[in-house]
Image (cartoon, rainbow, N blue to C red; front, side, top):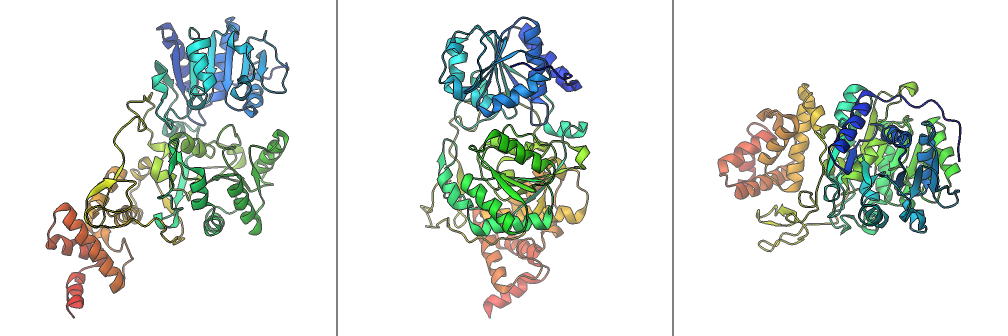
Amino acid sequence: MTQAPSQPPKLRPYQIDLINDLYRKLNQGYQKIAIIAGTGAGKTVISGQICAHAESAGRKLLFVVHLDVLVGQTYEKMQSFGLHCGFIKAGWPEDPEAPIQIASIQTMLKRGWWRTWPADVIFYDEAHITLFSRVGKQLLKKTHPNAVHFAMTATPLRLGKEQLGDYLETLVASPVPGELQQMGYLAPLKYYSLPLDSMANVESVKLKGGDYDERGLKQACDRPELIVKIVEEWQRLVRGKRTIAFCVDVEHARHVAAAFRQAGVSAETVDGETPVKERRRLYDALGASELRVLTSCNVISIGFDEPSVEVGLMLRPTQSSALHFQQLGRVMRISPQTGKDFGIILDQAGNLERLGFPEDIREYELPTHKASSGGGGPAPTKPCPACGRVVYAFIVKCPDCGHQWVSERPLLLEDMVEIYSSEQAKQINDIPTLIQLFHGHRRRAFKGGYAPTWAERSFFEHCDRRPHPDWCRGSLYGTRPSWEEQRVILDYLRQSARRIGKRDDWVAREFELEVGPGSWQKMVRYQSS
């Protein structure tokens, strides 16, 4: 399959630097190199230029993708470099004489000739998946151990025990997302999130392969009240903007799309069974604003490229930082021609608090099994909010005091509020906004059973400044809490005091900071009456 090449894309300065760094590593004797480039850094342009260099140098290169559908997408990008490509993909003609082979793992499992094809370079796209597949390990260890191996990914940390650093020797990397935003190559993001009690409750969902079990996740997330709420929040915060939604499974995605249509919003679903032509039609309709909302499960997390998308709905809780940052990246692409100034994330899944913000990535590292969170570290723990004993996170009843963690908490369905990455928060000087942020930290401490001192430390780490004592007022129940709410606050403070070794005068001070001057004496009189 050949086609007259279009003009090759012009590389950005940092892309040229990355490729030069890669070749310096080769000259230093490294053969197994990670190429880390986040979403929007131009992975396809970088990989296309590397493939063009390989072909011009007379090298044979095997380009490995993990899905059949990505073969066509990759080839479209390669055409701009005028490359002669063969394919290992079901239904596509094979040409073993072509110097570059674009190969899908799904088809490679059913073919054999690639095992003896004399590749000089193996290029793993989405390496956090392809390198760790059965085919990827065969290429690295058995069939082509002496080849040069380039492993490209946007997200170096993966679920499971095995990490990139266990197989690769060194890395080269693009600038981190915050730097790309400053350069104008990525759109800034605004974030909105629900309070804890309004999110899907995943406390009782088991982990499978390092991430939430899909069956339990579906029960927690595919609920009418949550779906209706995200439609309402979309209408309140981002009405009319091009939107993609990341869902738990296909049925969940269809339920979300149906709810939008019920509200008069054009919405469709794309899934793994959607034909390529139909996918393109839907993507084009979204880009042209003929379609407002496109829902999916996994399909638009990888390989989706529609820069005009303005909003991402995070409806699938995950423990995977790779999946999390890939999903965020779908909304970070720039599109000045459509008037897009920034992207917006509506997080109903709690992934931002669980896994972080792209702006807060300081540098890329090559994780190893020993150093990664999945590498056999201590099991996660939590404090009992009643007696303070630290127990394993999976414990549902405290062995000391008998306190039980309730997994079926009611959904309060509060409105979303704007939240900020650490880098964004450090730039905020507006006192009302800082107070709002501090209140968020105090509410998390309260709901998690942590002392107010935890909120102060957490706020300092987030914003790089100390909160003023006056900022505590009304953080939990507003500025006019009822007597019942004040009793709840008092019980919380007394439990905190026992846990951290504070006296009654500390409880009184913290109570007045929260409820207001003179409130402690009023509470004492109320309790004694």
